Image (cartoon, rainbow, N blue to C red):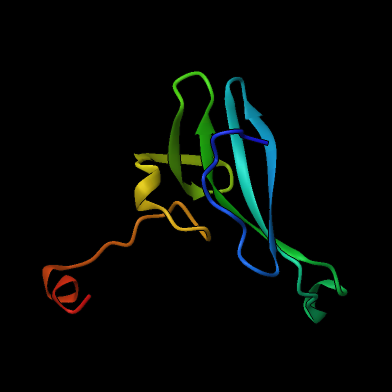
Length: 93
């Protein structure tokens, strides 16, 4: 587990931390709800990546590809992916 990971898992979810590459950890969020399509097992999704040497977080492109650096303040408990908004949609948020 990453000692400085600030998010608390939402109700019904938990986090998993796996070594991805040297000095890099993949962070997964697991939904404890069971689903019929995977024989009642829980489902997990990539939350993001953490570089323990540089102490920075990355948004995921997918579970095998690291994306851009993100500020932990701009992430949610569900994902480090950043929402891309046009100026019009940003005006309504």
